Length: 207
Image (cartoon, rainbow, N blue to C red; front, side, top):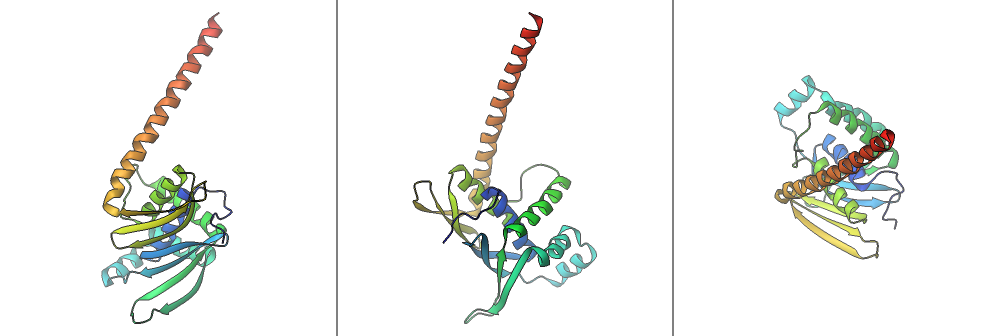
């Protein structure tokens, strides 16, 4: 089984895009695993309230944009009733082409939004954190499972060791804050190095 789909994106980008797709189907709890060169998701869609449905019909926004693209970028394999359960499950294959399209839609949406703390209750942001963690470890994503207020995921290290992580969603803010501080430090170092190079260049020109 392939555990690293042949895509040109990072796991952070790919998993965030998949999360956007799941959000467009109102999926909150799911199982996700690598399937060939894509990802296979088994999710439970949330039943919308009458008020939510009415709001969607009058204010389509990005949700409709995602849903329109959904017919092109993903393959809905089947919808069925699980044994001894009244819940409908969605079984969806995310192809590399579909993920790319979702990334483009997501970039448009993010460019319209103001900056700040991301909504860490959204599936896209939860999976983004998972992908960013795996990228930081130079690992390869294997699978993930979100249930209510927690998510667990498996990845493989460069030494081919399989590791399982379990996160409570309440812990994601601290992890996001830690990543933000690390990014800021890297930015500050780069700025100092750039300022130093500019200073050397200015000195050389005055000689």
